[in-house]
Length: 253
Image (cartoon, rainbow, N blue to C red; front, side, top):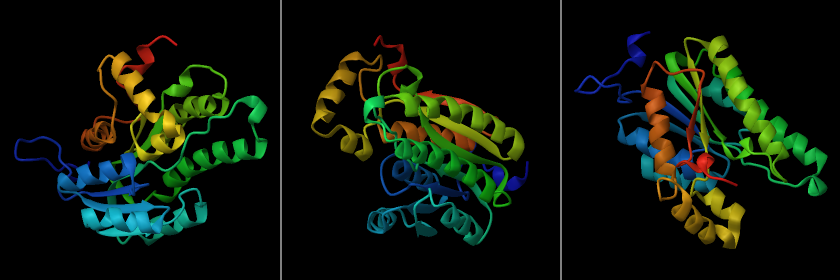
């Protein structure tokens, strides 16, 4: 491993000080909180997001070294973004994308093909176009989920993606080594995306989770971001999926 990826703090612990962290989907939620924690840890941050105005507001808080507004599912723009990075980076985190919940009798096949294909293409696109940009020992880090592990009506597309991403990440970890590749599988996380999906059912869902989760609270973006920072710093971790759901999988249906 090169010295560029082995930064430590005063106590000899792995650190992000002086590292460059790219967060794709950094304008809100988990991505913004990860960029915030990386910045607080001394990292140089590059932030991307689909909505230019929302990205501008997020960037005003964190003073990143660079920003780019584009849709990560646009593979041409994704390639242009990585080609345009001025120098090597240490870690890339991808939070872009949203789950698709539709029962079969409401499923539009073209939408399902797009949702599934875009997610896989974005993951593969980041792996492909970041080659030569991420330093040895650095990280590609993707976000998936745990909810699709339980079959249920409306979960067909999500379940397929939940099964596909760990296998894809494990293979990429071999092909891209010594760059490390990992997946965070989150349960319910209290983000603006969750609020948009649930609408007026959000508070009831929060109350339910507070009452039933073993941790007796709702998982938030800061929890996921802390795990992301740990995976960036711990250079023994690659090719694996790390669950963070407050014990949600342990609950009965």
